[in-house]
Image (cartoon, rainbow, N blue to C red; front, side):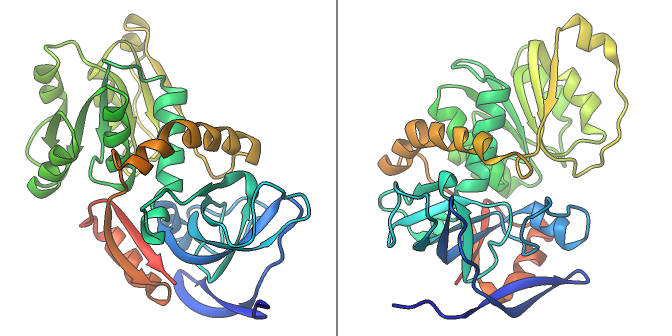
Length: 327
């Protein structure tokens, strides 16, 4: 069946998300064209809409960093995928559309028994958590992980993956409902940051030992407090800065406790780097999804043309897990 000439995409027009028609793109040699069934909504999309997170050069200006759907066209170099394959993919942009280009190396099969809606919730959070918690921070079985924002898409993924690989998990969240959800998902301890001082709670929960790894998307004034929560040889990974990029740094505890402070952003990394993460996910995590041991947490779905409402929900911070656009 021939493809239509045009598709509906969600364009950013002076900070407003608008559905507009555009021509359907053609895959390059190492790409595939995916007929999008669902697309994940992520906080970087909100930042891009506000003009705070421009897409990398030579990348689509359409927001959307993850999609699921059916391959409908192949680049000339692609021989390990086929038209008709059900895939989800990490993309650098273009996800808020009826059709989306994806690097073939970053396509993963939709796990058995998962819907397209569930599959669209996987790439951004699972690539991010695996790369940062397991690759950069080297979380080991028996170690303790502290996750700030435990009820977010990143947080709910981090809880499940860390528990699947035999770590202890402590999370912070902003309401009793969110804390209880994280506990039910597998967190060993939860801290309501609206009512409790997480530094003092960590001291009690770890008998003053501290945690081994911190995954933080808050930044700002959380940074010096995180240092107080860290054990000897602990690792802090910064993946976002919702409370701001600037902070004070006391170097003495970094030296005395031999702390490692690192951070990353995923979007601008090249396909080879991301493909290495995809290979690890395929080997180590996709079997857990197929067996049902872990699963994506979906809060709400919106029609593609209601992307603005999805962004309103994300900015309200009332959601638990992922927000998905369906086509």
